[in-house]
Image (cartoon, rainbow, N blue to C red; front, side):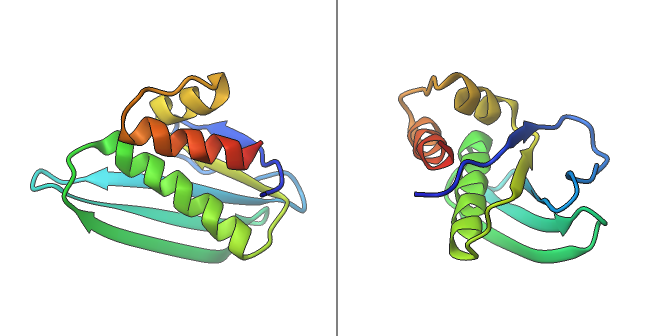
Length: 122
């Protein structure tokens, strides 16, 4: 199981640094009109220096919430694989953040994936 990680909802578009000696992993997804979507992960130190990044491009879904949930899942996977412990995950997907914080998950694809993510964050 992954270590407990701070989880932040950010609606503003400007980056703010994590506390000293922490890393911040920003997650963002984008959906196009033709059913393609992608997400990006950017891992930075408190001085703003990038120490890791990943992108994914997928097709077959027009559900932006599912794309955001997959982005969160990939973020947790990255943190686990790199064995990082002092990481703040930041994303602006209000539905996903709310579900994780309230531990209330809809019975759909993104809800099930977000529930798995929440368990990993506990």
